[in-house]
Image 1 (cartoon, rainbow, N blue to C red):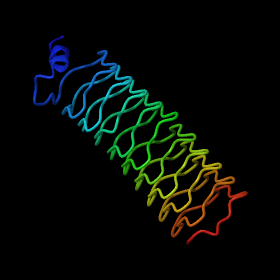
Image 2: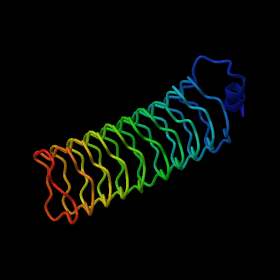
Image 3: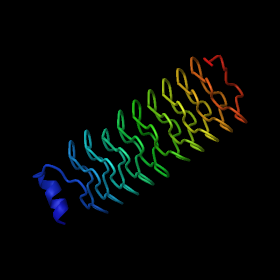
Length: 213
């Protein structure tokens, strides 16, 4: 495939809109490559190096990025059903990205930018989201049990019916967030801010709301 050969040679300025559907890019060094708008549906990017790669608006439906250094820009990208388990996503720009059905087990997302992202129903159990920007993100029905959300910005986030059992929300900003029906059993909320937060029907058993309101 011509596009794949060009990618291997690295003799290019950018590959915006390139068609790499179902291609095996496992272990590729793609650092700094401009792949904005690329078709990466079903592509294998396992263990690849994507630091500073631009994937704005790329279609990564069902792609595998497990164990990848994915500290990249995924602005508005489609990551539905993508495998991001054990991926390094520290500080990644995932604003407005669609992550429904994505696998994020043991992924590292501290400091990631996820404002407006769609994480509805995603399994984020035990995931590191310290200091992440989740303003206005859709986390309704997500599994965040045991997740580390310390100092995370969750202003206006949708967390209805989310599972936050034993999650660390210390210092998190939840102003205007919707936590209706959420499970906050034994969650850590020291110094969290709940001003204007909707908590109707949420489970607060074992949670000490000595937080800022």
